[in-house]
View 1: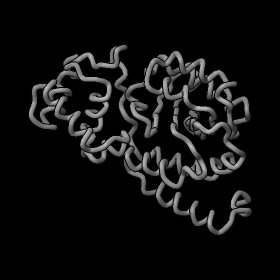
View 2: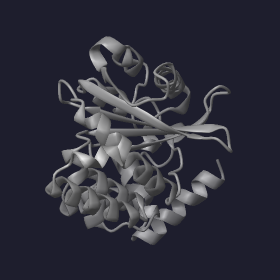
View 3: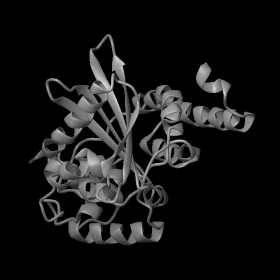
Length: 259
């Protein structure tokens, strides 16, 4: 409890609110809103990358949580992503699996990000600092790595204390929701889907539609207005030659199952 002993009552109350909100996380939208809320006071970031699995065997899955346009799990190529994930995990292990910060410009992350050829790779070019920490599963012998990327030039030492306090709740929140499917294989280099001619943004919107999200919820996730989402949906309906959301989801799922 030493981490809490030096905190003011106001900080303790804020931590309590953050923990309570984390316990209530039940969906990816809940997780995004939680991370973009008061959590930003202690872990300021634009992108959170989570990777878990057997890093030694390169059997890794990942999730990306961000409010930046297009920076999504489904639009990152798992094959190109492996070197970056493996490198970050090695850094964490070399540091004794303790939390530590990185200067992105001096860490080689920018070099690896150029190889990603996706929205995440482009977004990482605008990041300046990073913090990583993780959880080791002693029973399953797997690790779960958490990495935040910030446009701030430097993350101070207070973020190290914060991640130690908040990581158990962050890990619990992430494990309470199902990971999103990887859809990178459905995208061409131009950013359009191989089927139906949907753009990357339109395919991204359809991913959330499949999860039952409303236009307002999708707009909040993608940081665009619900009116913009509605316009995208109208273009999607036209490309798919359908009249409503249910027909659009059904047609896309049929095309994937026949692929």
